[in-house]
Length: 187
Image 1 (cartoon, one colour):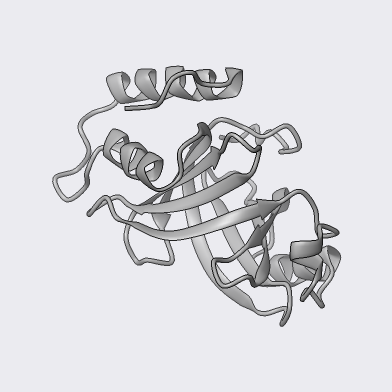
Image 2 (cartoon, helix red, strand yellow):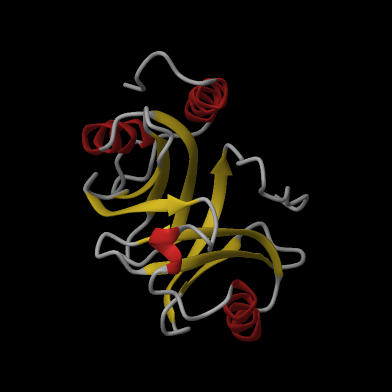
């Protein structure tokens, strides 16, 4: 279950999750429920659920729920939950900016260079850039690119040290939105 009390955005996400779950059909036979992944995420990192995204193509090669949790200290965590097994297979923290010491320490590629790399390969308009710190301490840019006329987005992860694309996924839907994220009118 989603823990109480939730922040106002967490409450919005929780309310939206309940209505989406109630309004949609049961998950396909080979997938577990979103609630099971939310519970798994809370078992790893307790806090307010800020945002949930469904990735139909993911680094794990399986449908995935990307769950963002803000803990009691204000740190945001991104947890990847395999929608077939309910296993959390990746845990990252988010930096506020590329200037944050934990991110900047080993970053050699600017945000502009990372965006250029992603857009050169996949095109699209930048919807959001997140500054992630992998579990091994490596910084990366996660760049969400909206394609004109499409309901999905590419999520392109660019290693901030090497400039290489290290992950690609396709986001099918999202619940919740962070303050600096651009709204995508096609979704």
